Image (cartoon, rainbow, N blue to C red; front, top):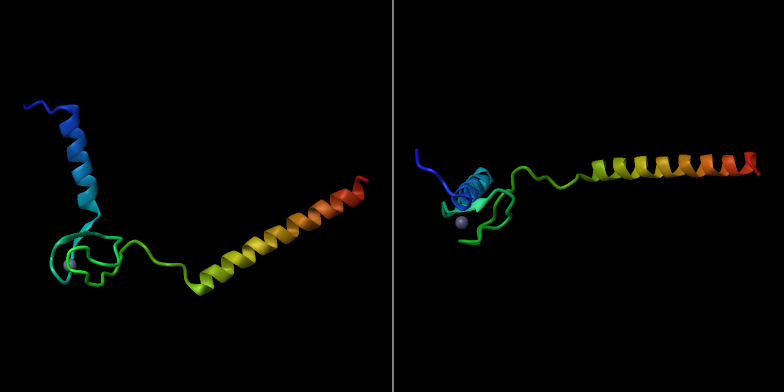
Length: 85
Ligand SMILES: [Zn+2]
């Protein structure tokens, strides 16, 4: 069995990691990373996989939850201030 150096091993792992996130460009077939929106080889539009921008509905929901928590914390602090004056 061939013994690999630490450097070779690291290089192999790096290549595997990149491989996992590489897809073929639908326009030119060149390997591109799956989160890219534009092909660096031909400039064609790509559809990134594994990444979806937050929808308006989701943003509103997150904002509502954040505001609710903020309001509850504010009320609790005010109540505590009044009670332990
Ligand atoms: Zn391309």
